[in-house]
Length: 117
Image (cartoon, rainbow, N blue to C red; front, side, top):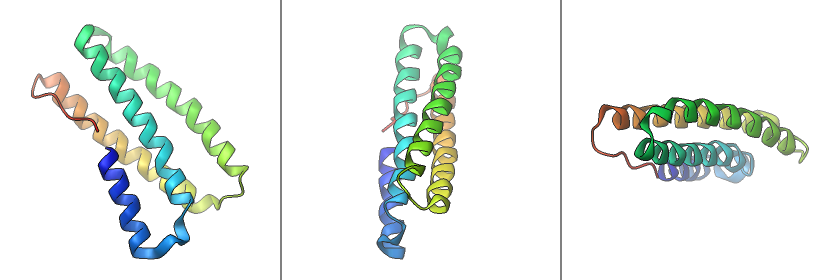
C-alpha cells in the first residue's frame, strides 16, 4: 500500500510537475495512514481472535470517517485548492479500500499471509 501510494504520487508529480502538490500529497497521506493502521489492527486481531475481525473492520471504518472528516476540514482551513485535494483523497480512499479488501479476502481464505505495506 505504501509503495503504490508513493509511486502514484511520484508518477503524477513527474508527469504534471509540482503544480498538483501539496494537495496531491495531502490527499494521499490520510487514506494511506488509515489503511495501514486499520490493516495492522485486522492482522493482529485475526492472529489472536479471528471471530472479532468483523467488529474491528466496522470500528476502523467508523474511526476513518470521523478522522477523515476532521482532516479534510483542517486542510480546507489551510487554503489548499479543494478540487485536486478532494479528487485525490477520494480516489486514494477507494483504491486503498479495494486493496484492503483483497488482503482481507486472502487472509480469511487461509492462504498465505498478505503483505500489507
